[in-house]
Amino acid sequence: MRFRDFLRVAVLLFGGAGTALAVVSVLGAARADSDALVYVAAGWWILAALAGVWIGRRPVATKGIARLLASARSTNTLPELEPGTVMFNRLWPLAVLAVASGVIGFFFPQVPVIATGYCLLMALLWRKQHAAVAAIEGRDGVEFWFDKSSPFGAPKLLRLPGLRRVEPVETQPVR
Image 1: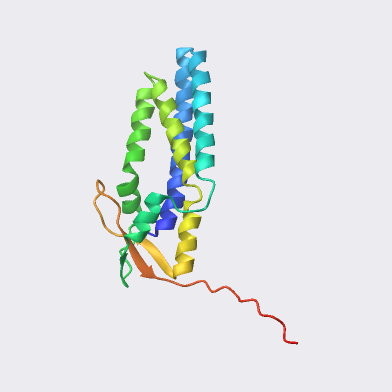
Image 2 (image 1 turned 90 degrees about the vertical axis):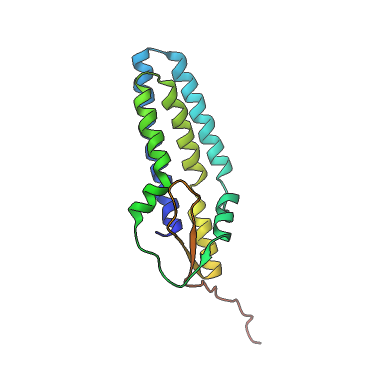
């Protein structure tokens, strides 16, 4: 699976998990009849959203992603195309967070409130990372793909030859 496609899907999944957890939070707060929880939740979600928008505002790769791209192993062979396996291996913590927070949220509505803020923060923080990776790929004429790695270990990337973007050069008119 291409790394920039993974980043796009991850943003959507974080946003979807945040939405589902927000629904569980609101239902839990309504069931608990707690106005204070609603105000604290709204404040936390606004704070997380503002932080995500502010930190993720530039289309520059974060330090962690830049380090991951720099450590990519060069190869000429395309890896096996297993997008489902890659998504599960890399995003299983998100699934555990969403399911566990959703279940616990029916008893303690504060838990999905916190998890919703985290999901909002991550979705907004990563929203421009795919563009940063695409810019690096276009500049260097490579593509970054996931390599097989343990779901509990750090991800590994492969650096494959790709197409280099060539910009037209402005020339001065002849006089």
